[in-house]
Image 1 (cartoon, rainbow, N blue to C red):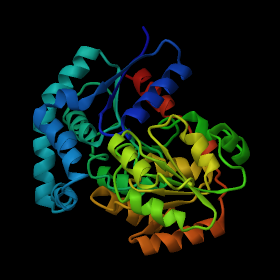
Image 2: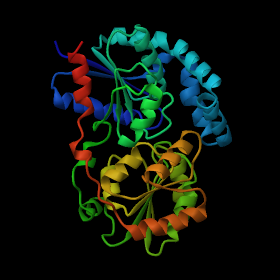
Image 3: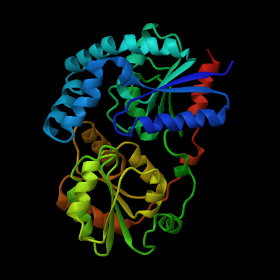
Length: 364
């Protein structure tokens, strides 16, 4: 019988759906015939969980930014509040997730969404989840819900995340750094010139990429304005699926031929091969992807909630510069451009996430 894998994602930006789809592709590639089902975990964890995880952020990210800081602190800061939030999440989300696992007849379950990972790890630890569970972790910090004790294996995209995962999950937890949660194109060489030709960019210009992630959040207008202060720079603003932001930036800089606005793209591997520096607001996989391409990164324009912890990790591990103000961004851009692109090694020899998922299913 073919192995059946259930991958749980969440339609909250692109940071969970895309890793789920890339993992599904890797599984089918490594073992043809594997039955892979990708499901939106918010759809089954109930209206309350969906509202708090998806609907509320849509308001807070754009209108009540200060409240996002408070809400994140409330569910990850004080031990009593964090424990209460996690317990309530487990009670609300467990019935729907257990029903979904049973209905899918899965041999193994993988989650790439922290709230679902929290619930599934608790179910696995208590014995209520009878199949192996692997937590796919695509962030470098803020692991409070990603790394709940109970998962069979924790699959991280960057080795810098391992220490925090073990601090939460237990020092004996099995944690593996893997490929499989991002576009395989990032692991293939791509010259700057070829990428620029593909994207119709000037081969000699200084290219500054500005990104607000899939949601298009943060001080994107400020990032574009400061980037234009770089002599001879062309600024490419990647607005994700935020059509309002795309229209706003296009209107604001309509008279400046050095600004190019792009919506959601399937060509990030080329953009990051072509760019000289990335100004990014939301951390996550985009920073890893830039590192894979040797493109220096500056975190700017958001810095709220979990991104505060990301920024601390970026500084601690030297993964990206962090600019708190527009003035800081101007100086960071000068340093990044003077330093140039950086060589990256070691990622091409990492094991695949699919290999651990399939091994867990085979070991049942």
